[in-house]
Image (cartoon, rainbow, N blue to C red; front, side):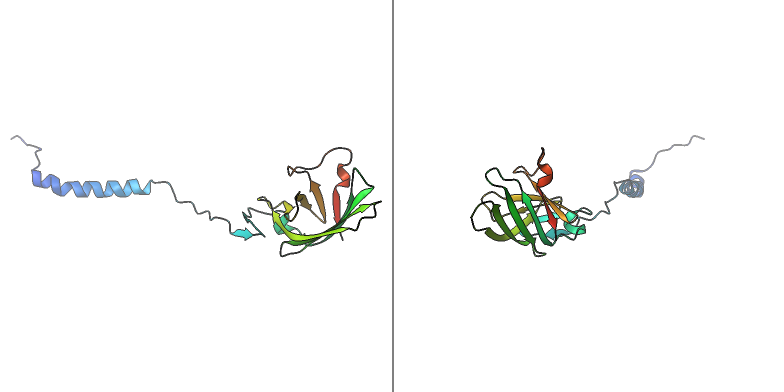
Length: 161
């Protein structure tokens, strides 16, 4: 007696879905898992939207308040600066040139946080001023947003009062 392993054509069409369905389910289970990470919530500032990615000066320091200091000046004894930062991202800046009879200038506007939440830019000026925000102090930055270096670097600091 000889046995044949021949399957009838209609049997193959019935077996095909039974073979393919489990194969598809297995392959679907092997796909890359979906990320459970969520996008950080945006933090609105005066004119930009930044994404807080952890503790930074903007969200972890008590930065609103009054800051004062005297920064170096090439044509006078120094520039007396009084800067008030408000929690609504507005500011008032008063600058007086020491040793000159000029009346101090007062400027108001809004400031903008950088994307890292570590520095601010006062926007209402022909030459915007930038400050690194530290614990109870502001460090003036140069026009490129970098820390000021050199012998007088420690004088470019405003203390909170």
